Image 1 (cartoon, rainbow, N blue to C red):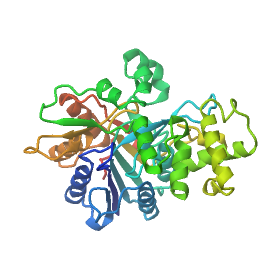
Image 2: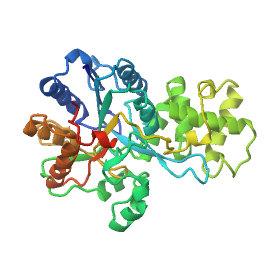
Image 3: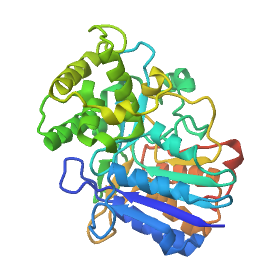
Image 4: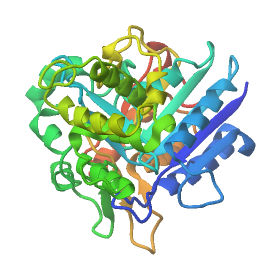
Length: 394
C-alpha cells in the first residue's frame, strides 16, 4: 500500500490577501504524516509561497501536482491532500434563470482559481480501491468536492429551507459578504479568543479578488460580472477546466449572434459580451484553448453544476460550511506561530488520539474544540457512507 500526499499553503505575502499561518499548517502536517502515519518524505509534495526552494502554489502547479498524485495511484493506495489558504465563491455569470448556484473555489497564490467542479473531476479519476482525503482549511470549503454526500454539515442546498429557519443558512448576509471584506469581519465574529491573538478570515471577498486582478492586468474595467472571462484572459491555456467550459459556451453563443438582454448573455452576461467583442476585434484566434475544450451542454458552465453520480473515493473535511469563514490566527510573538483554526484543531486531536481517530470522530471533535475556543466556524465531513467511520487518512 502506497501513501502519497500533496500539501498546499498560500500566504499571499505582500498582497491585500495576505495570511500568516498557511505555510506553518503545511509544515506541521508534513511532520504529522511522516511521524504518525508512516508517509515517506519523498512521497509528500509540498507547494508553499513563502520559500522559493519549494514549488509555488500557482493554479497550474496545484492542478499538475494533484493530477500526478492521482495518475500515480494504484489500487489500495492512500492519497492525502491538505490545502491551507483563501477560499472564495463565484456567483453565476451566465444570465440564465436556472443558473443560480455558486462555484466554491480555492485560491492559488496567482489567483488562478480552482473550482469545486475541477476538484471533483480529479477525484473521479482516483482508481477503484483507492481513496483520497482532502482537508481544506479555507473559507466556503463546505462541499468543495462537488456533489459529495454531506455527512456532517449544513451546506447542502436541499436543506436551505431548514437553515433559513434556524439562522444557519446563507440568506442575505451570506450574499452581502461576497462584496465586502468588512462584513466578513463583523458577520462571523470570534468570541472569547485571547486578546493577544490576531484573527483574519481565510476568505477572499470578490471585491478584493477584483482589485488584485486589476493590479495584475492593469485593466480597471474588471468587475463581478466578468471575473471568469478575466481569469481566462489572464491565464489562457493554464485556466481551470471549469473556466474554459464557461468561456466555450459563452463564445459559442457570442459567435452565434445572441442579442443583449436575453438568454446566456443576459443581465450579467452582457458585461462579458462587451469583453469578448473587444478581444475578438483585436485577435480572431482569441479563445482557442476554450474552444478546444469538451463541453456536454451549457449547464456544464453553470455555477455549482451537479453530476449525476456521487463520488465514491473522495473524502472532504472542510474548515467550515460553504457560507462560513475559517480563521487564520496569529498569537503573540512569544507564544506560538500563526496557524489555521482547523489545522491546529486537527493537530491537537491527532496528538491526543495518537492518530487513531475516524473521519466522523475527527470532525465532531474539531467542531467541539473550535466551539470551546470561541470560533463560530463548523467543520464538515463529505463522503460516501462507507468512509464515515473509516480511519482518518489510513
